Each structure stands twice: as C-alpha cells, then as structure tokens.
Length: 308
Ligand SMILES: CC(C)(COP(=O)(O)OP(=O)(O)OC[C@H]1O[C@@H](n2cnc3c(N)ncnc32)[C@H](O)[C@@H]1OP(=O)(O)O)[C@@H](O)C(=O)NCCC(=O)NCCS
Image (cartoon, rainbow, N blue to C red; front, side):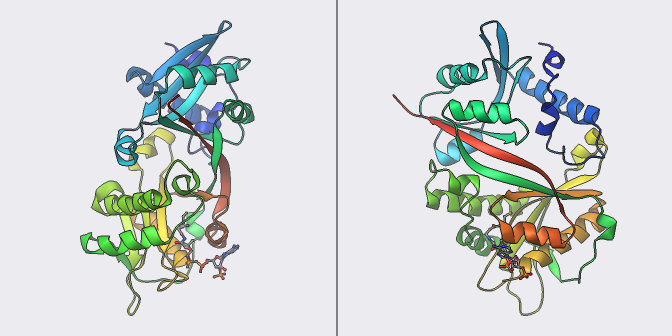
C-alpha cells in the first residue's frame, strides 16, 4: 500500500509529536510520520474500509502491557488516513463494530487542529477524557535558576516513590479521568510506572538530595537520542513527576530546573518538551517561569465497546 498518496492533508503534520518546534521542517515532520506509519502497516496493525468508494486506513496498535495490567483488551488508534473525509463518521462506526473486540477499550490522542476528526469521534460515541498541553524550551542556553542538590533515584527509593506517586493524585490524567478505570487502579498504575522507570524504563529519575530534605518527589526524563537524527534536532522529554505536598512542597520548580540543566549540560539536548493536562495550572505556570512555551494542544478520546 502506498501511504504517500494519503499524505495530502494539511492536518497531518500536527500528529508528529514534535510539531511544536518550528525549526523542524514540514517535510521532516511528514517523513517521520510516514516512516512511523509504515512500520504499523508492515506489522499488519491497520485496517482499511471503503465507504461509498472512499478508502479509510485505520492505523492502530493492540497494547499488550495495558491489556494485561488493566485486564481489558486495550487499543490505541494512531491515525485515520483518507484522501477525502466525507464518510469519516461511518468509517469510525465500522471500525468500532468490526475491528474492536467486545468489551475492549480504545483511545486516541488528536491534535486540536484536526477538528473534523474530533467531531466525527464525538458523533461516533467516543468521549473526551483529557486535554493535553505540550510545552517546550528551545532556548536552553538562556536557562538560569539557583542550583539545588539532586541525585539519581535507585532501587532503595522504590517503595517511598511508589507511595508519593499514588498519593499525589492528578484527577485529570487519562487514567484518573476515564471512568473505565477505578481510582485505586489508576493510583496503582502510577506507582507501577515510577517503579518501572527506576528499573530502567526511563533514562533518568531525579530526586532531591539536599540536607534535611526527604527524597519525597521525583521527575523522570527520556533522552530520546534515537530520535535526534530522524528530526535533525537533539530533543529530550521530561515525563512523569510528583511532589509530596507534606514534605517537599515547592520542589517541583527545583526539579524542573535541575533536569533542564542536566539535559542541556550532561546529555547535550537542544530542545526539551513535556506535557500536562490543561487543568494543571501549578505545573504550566512553573514551566512558564522557567522559559518554557506553549507548543501545541491535543485531546484524548476513548471508547469502551460493551458486550451486547
Ligand atoms: C503539581 C505538583 C508537582 C506541584 O508541586 P509543588 O512544587 O509542591 O508545587 P506548589 O504547590 O509549590 O506550586 C507551584 C507553583 O504553582 C503555583 N500554583 C499552584 N496552584 C496554582 C493555580 N491553581 N494556578 C496558578 N498557579 C498555581 C503555586 O503558587 C506555586 O507558585 P509560587 O511558588 O510562585 O507560589 C504537585 O502538586 C503534584 O505532585 N501533583 C500531582 C501530580 C502531578 O500533577 N504531577 C505533574 C504532572 S505533569
């Protein structure tokens, strides 16, 4: 299948996770996506439908880890490609009826720019669960903030950081916002995530290391070195964080600043990005204080296909 012929939409580039960085050319953004989507096609992770002569390609992925963890068959819809979009709603309903198994869960992250798809998903019984903001900083040379002592978390930190992750709940992340998951299940997921991060899922887990400060907060980062040649930019991402309001209040800005120094000075990153929910005012106001700028907005939609 020639995917290029489905690459005419001017919305497509917004699906590239790095579309906020205007130093990356449109061609580069699209080439990256094409290469990515071709991998799904090769692994047979797609389905095509024809509605009244219009072809729709659904690229999706069955998420094995999530399926086992949450005990519900979980799918991530990556994108829906077509030359025209006259029957998008009908195509989505077909996908729901004929591809998704009974009693399964499917979600998709969509850039705000793709308003046509957002409306078609709403009309096909998908629900909005999260609105995400992506912030970025590509003027890292200007970063300046007082220094604080931090260190890399190790295995001994796991029990404590699991507790911090599950206690410092964010009601608006996908797992807490989507009523398909129980709150305790979502809390547990985040504590499993930080445990796995310390065990190697992420490149760096940072915790405070000041005298008389308990290491009751963390911030993780992925260096993303494999991505650098693909987009011609040394980009890295800060991923998960939580700060105990009892013992570490005010440490969030210190961790974000120290991770900015670490990524810039030790890793060699030229651009850093991170995302949060549009509700997390403490978080994005902190990023703005440190020179991070709003780059793009996405929405997460989901559907649970119930047993009839
Ligand atoms: C968000 C979180 C990390 C912040 O921890 P913290 O360092 O103790 O943050 P603070 O409460 O000191 O707030 C940070 C700043 O945001 C400001 N702030 C707090 N609520 C705010 C609001 N509703 N609107 C605007 N600013 C707000 C604070 O005033 C503070 O700024 P200041 O120092 O200039 O006064 C912590 O609450 C947490 O772990 N939450 C749950 C997990 C989470 O959301 N993680 C981030 C995911 S991206």
